[in-house]
Amino acid sequence: MVTFLAGGTGTPKLLDGAASVFPPAETTVVGNTGDDVELGGHLVCPDVDTVLFAGGGVLDRERWWGIDGDTTATHDELDRLADAAGLEPGPRYLPEEAQTAGRDIARWRRFSGVAEFMEIGDRDRAVHVTRTSLLDEGYTLTEVTRLLADAFGLDVDLVPMSDDPVASIVHTPDGPLHFQEFWVAERAGPEVEGVEFRDADDAAASDAALTALDDDVVVGPSNPVTSIGPMLALDGVREALAEATVVAVSPFVEDRAFSGPAATLMEGTGTEASTAGVAERYPFADAFVLDDDDGTDLDRPVVRTDTRMDDADDAERVAEACAAALEAAR
Image (cartoon, rainbow, N blue to C red; front, side, top):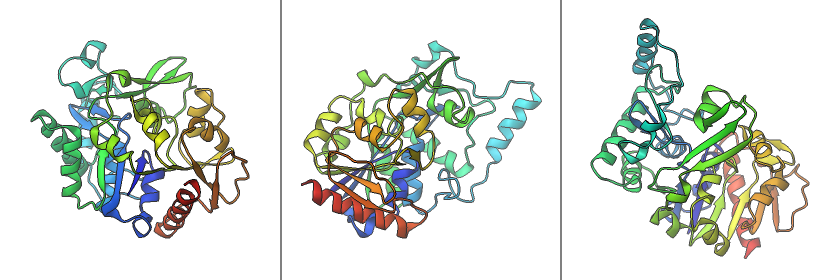
């Protein structure tokens, strides 16, 4: 049995080739929900949905988000209406009092749907409508995620890190930004002064996630700050990882990040943007998978391979390195 901690694109790419190494029926994927947003009244779970769409064979692999070939008629009409009405374009973060009123899923991550700043495809939107409606009916996010996974035909067990809302907030000189505003709207441009996982103290790791941490754990090459950090902020997760056998795949080659804002966010939170910095953030990791060109000397077992993943064959190679690292860690 193995559990993958997933966020962003790194771990979903790894999962592309993991099935031949780790049997899907014995695999759980715990998805980050710290960068979820409520946009126009619908809960969007970007990291969970990337795994959902990839496992369902419909992911747009050029962008690594959304559904391949999806149309955007609703999104385009929202933009047209806002422009015609003379409204300011997004992101339109709702007032503070609205962040804690109404449904719990809205806490500190609630945006107006006027001129929505995230492009949501029409089929993609149907997923968010279904998810939000089932939550309104009384289902937990874990139950909803598993129902959607069944609808997309996933072979692995996909669960969220928590059924409770947690918001990844990036602090900048001009004020706090929800991670999606920082990354999607601002293109990671603002200086980072810190990252807060708002409401993490009041949230609990889902029972399914904690149970999964009893198995071997692979922390994929996801952003250590905003993909894995929200999970680590939940009570009991670090302790569970300390007891498990854990392998982490570095998203860096020494001090070069493969993609995304990992380097900016690590530097902004006081950690060296490098494989060494990742190891510092992951004291619970018993072994690491590093790139062949990464000469970082760590105090734990290391398995090296080419960690760039452009296709399923690449991902299978990295998954095999993860299996070898798990053995080395025992």
